[in-house]
Image (tube, rainbow, N blue to C red; front, side, top):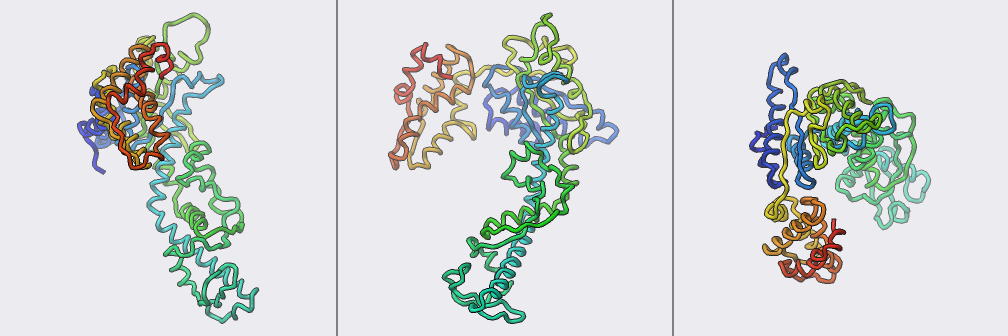
Length: 466
């Protein structure tokens, strides 16, 4: 895989986040240094530590999006946590070491999906062969029970008559196992009922199904699958061929996977490539008050120190070293400042970048330029109903102007203000879209003022626009 350069990383980030060049450059250099470290001799490589980054700036300017996107560019394990969710060790609440546990689960799920994708075709072929065998046996058994449908001939498959409930509407044919496999491969028997045998209980590795990603995170990606490779028994299920293929493909994939290799690769990626984003760091710091033990503020800061400077955390899959995990922290620091953090923690974030508040021009750009911009999203959504919606240039300018005005009057929520205004703007169009099929609607400045202008003008009512 081609390793992106710092400049290419910044260019990729420009497609999703507007402005904030200083923060982009800092993240790009930090990620590039990790790739450079891989090329060093082992004796030097161990001493090169990542330079953790502290981002400061108002809400809604792109702090979280920058960290998430930069991890996605390098395909690195990534997890986001809020500092306010943790308490000091020994008290009710989340322990900071759970950050590493979450990161390991994310990495394991990611590696599993990649491995399954590589063996999916082979697993499906094996599943198809098993289904063909089950159908073959099912037909042979039926032939013995229903004698009027044909006689069993040694070395061949009985002729299946139309009246048989499993083969309604079919003409009398002689099906060999090879013919069954061919029909299955061409998806011509998808609705045919078949009785299959599955492991009982199903291996915990079934949780590897990519569609069950939440189960992976909540229950552990692997569970105890490595201890259940040998099924304790078999149970029969009668399902349609389509469902049987999914169940058996998953089962065959679990048999083909080398779980130890998947775990080892997942752990390696965490230690070498992991990125942790700690949001709301400013909420756990502030002026020192003599009001007793601060278990969710200074206590959490002390517990974070070992993770940041490098320690070993025990996880369900083995020990993980945090020495080379990149930690990116962020906070608004509107009611506090970074110097309110304990000195030891300040030193663990040697790189500090300040993100600028968004101007009206920035909001205009955010509305139209990013790949996932709101304008593109709503135009595409309403187009599915046959309604053509076009945001004009003056319409975009008016939306940005109103968002800027509301940010000045009430709490400044940055680009997040656009979500509420645009959603309110297209609310009527979204509701009546099925009735407007084939129409074209231009969202220009007068249309914007008509839909949301009055709400912004009324300062008292405007307080309720988030």
